[in-house]
Image (cartoon, rainbow, N blue to C red):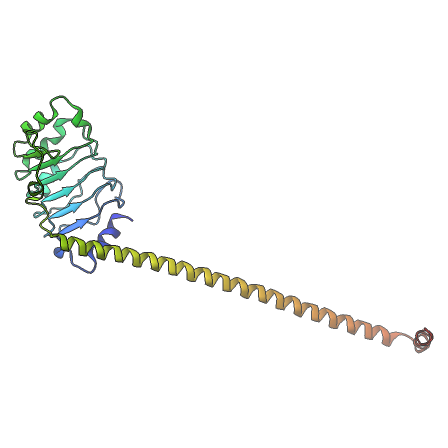
Length: 253
């Protein structure tokens, strides 16, 4: 499913301004860019774009209230300056599994004054010497890098969710349930349409078969009538004497 259709499905008759959490994981991006997401999502606080094939975040709209952004398992290699421009209140950023190789590519994140948590698991940059020290030095506003603070203390659940998406678990469960029901409805609709198409095709084939049979029967009937007419004509043309002889021969037999 492409990103535009997924966003339309996630709205579920709501307006963009009603949405606080938007999960678009595993859908398809257009040429590696974000599409269908607009600045109309003025109250959006949590956005997840995991494994959507992103090469760039250049098309990201301005989302002033967004606090948590999930961009893991994409192919982003730079261009992070857009995040500081479009997401001024971002506190949590997950870039795990992307193509980030150098510390310098993270420099634009210095402008994100509220950034507290940054994840870079499985990025090549994590293989550099003094990686953690360099990132904390570059981004002094950070509290947690890859889930740990400067003293290698793991982030607690409360810290990990602080200033997060602000959506309670019940709402999450309800939205997930609605999404699953919508997906099930779409699957049933597609299957029913396919079944109806198969039945219709089968009926058309049966109708054609019966039509061919009727034509054959009609043709055979016409040929039989023609043969009978020809036989009658030939008998009428036969001389009377010849007919008598034939009749006598038959009677003798």
